[in-house]
Image 1 (cartoon, helix red, strand yellow):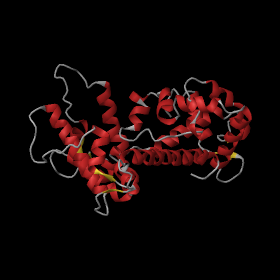
Image 2 (cartoon, helix red, strand yellow):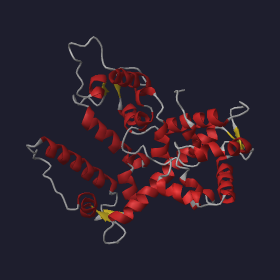
Image 3 (cartoon, helix red, strand yellow):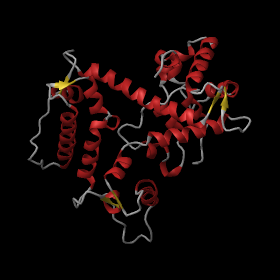
Length: 317
């Protein structure tokens, strides 16, 4: 268990948004192995708008909504929340808010409101103009070439998400484009994209050297810097499951796709550590409500969007 968990983890009972998305959520959450308390606020909790809305609720309504969410988390209805139940809810919340965000983006990107997002509409929303690069011609300027490569990757992912080969992406295809890690038919694409970027010798695997990228040890240094030691440890202990010194396609997938399950389990443990008053390793409604003031007064939390997200405190995820 990593040290440093603060009261912010209590907010995970109320919200676990999909902030991990494009980056490595584990790296953001535990830089150099230390728990970042404000990660829970930034990535997992609502912002100032949610705070403003929450404080307008009466104490009775806050209490009512909190108890409703607790009831939903309690899958076996025994009156206690276990690590497993908390972890399951958190993972569901990750996906729920990722999907909600994608649905909101879809409306913004669909400029002509025809129920699909074309490649031109995507470009206009992202860059205010339609961009078209020659796939076979590299640019002299390094920054422009880097952008060209990223843009071509986006276009390739867009085309892969477009299952029906129509003029644009419908909502389901747009979700696959924005969150390919959540859609089965995009899994192979995610793997191949990672291999194209990191597998420099083309053998279908990612070695430790390829994993570390352009890093080369300073010949005057007696040892590697701390961040390299951390990365090497992650390669050996987190990703290279068969210990053969390289990452196969499935191991590459576990590397490039955020491990929401692992994050959820860690957060569930943090939550129990903070609130379990009788050390039975599960949370009663009374324990949660007794710690409610700690949550509400903590500047490390933004209260929690789920308390005013009607889909969560009234309907199933």
